[in-house]
Length: 193
Image: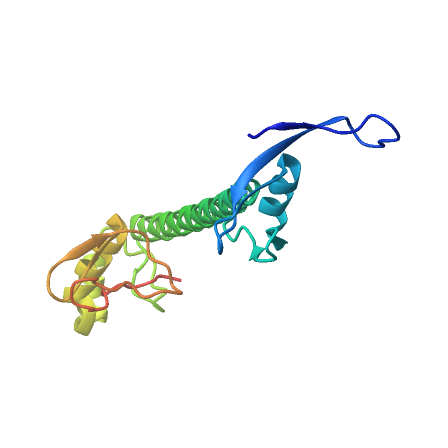
């Protein structure tokens, strides 16, 4: 801050004292004084002003107010992004709960069919087998009887076995095939209607 100039008393319409700030012209280095509020306005609006020799000067950098506005805008965008990520995660979690509930329902249905003596093979409605379900699979479904039990056992436990012997523990979603992330092989699963 610079000196305080006293204005003439007679007929003066503005305050009798005004604070000035001394500055140097960016081009000719001449020192000159300007009102402090004028400097603040030029820092905020970036308008051009002139030294006594007529050289133009201006403040190109962002003012403190502009820096704060930029930071607030960035924080709003960041908050919005985090809110979007949270909503997406909640939606995905709800979807996974529905998929798990559907898988549990299919597992319960398969267990109930086997316990009731109904053939678990897709399309086969043979019932009244009692505990002879395995024998029925060997005689009526010989091409799949050796693998039917092995295929359904992982399905009943919620485990999917891939051709390379690795397994993945998760619920099956019919819209997305179960793929081994390491090899890209699809899991062998049998969905029971």
